[in-house]
Image (cartoon, rainbow, N blue to C red):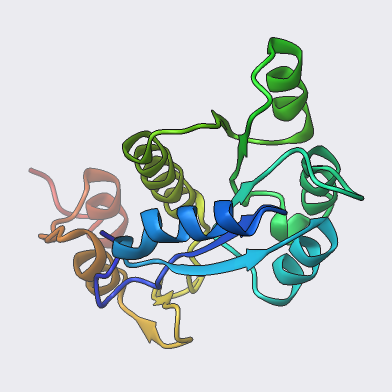
Length: 185
């Protein structure tokens, strides 16, 4: 799904203290064109999120030591990680647990046992939303955009390569008046 050459491969961090759950989620995500990192507990998750900024986190709630709620809150403490979508993937389904998850900063909540097709739909949706929310580094003078590799390219080229949008150029009335003050239509 996300294997377009012009796009950065999304990185998903999967956090669960049960190895079987990690393997199951990895198997479900395998064909999606994403990079998968795993962590078996909260401390590993925080270290991985700091070392390799993920685009999305699938996070179990019930883990020994630091639970998922605390992990989520700690991830959201840092501005560079605040916008990372966190989806809780847990057996906790009581309303107060779901609300607690959203209060901790998650964007979605999937209960175990989950259906693979539902998990994929939610992952795809939140990765797309995350990509749309990302800021584009743009030159304030020429409006070129810096791509994922650090190269600058015209905005039209950048957008066309990623969204297939083509551009035509014209002059709006305000710019026409500014550039050609004597012109009258």
